[in-house]
Image (tube, rainbow, N blue to C red; front, top):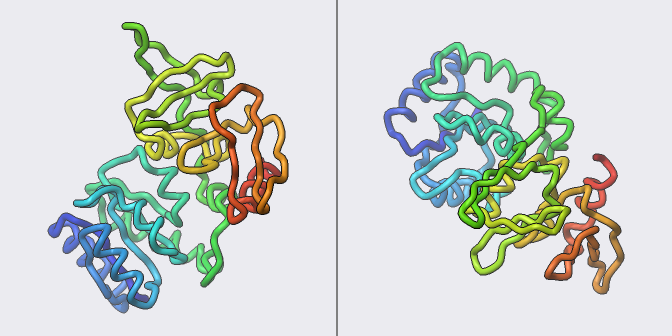
Length: 254
């Protein structure tokens, strides 16, 4: 088994490597990387490993950025001190999520789980998210509400009252079904990580839409889709042809 470790804390990486060698003496640590950049370079230029152990927060950002540059088909075990990224970890091939400081017993359990997924991860096949979540026993519930500040008041907005979220001029804005607007301090990427992937869909770089807000979907020029909502929105919501199949599957499988 060829293993890659992506961890910016050198001591933590060495400790992890030592525990792996105790549990899997025949395993080979082919690389120990400390940043998004080095991970992308290695995974792009070398054969895919059998398993990756990955920290969430690296020296140059969140490790989820790696998946935007490299297609990773092998299972990933996240070893991190941050518990709030569990759902995003699962969406990026995460088969386990171990909170630091981790123990040998936790790693042994992670390897047992990996063995149960031997037939799940196939080369050049993208795992089905819904099936993966079901098998891991994790509920994709997402964040229940957002605390916003408007007109010198703090207000709690229930997530199920949000029709869509969009970003413009670096400002992230919530729009409710009552057509009320509130700004958020987080980026739209950060907000997406907190929402249920079953309920909200990222149409493009600007828009996250609630399934309940979708009125209809039309075919558009160039094999694109035009998404119409039950509430007014400032832009035409067009979905590129490369995303249409995944989007229609999401609509079908909810």
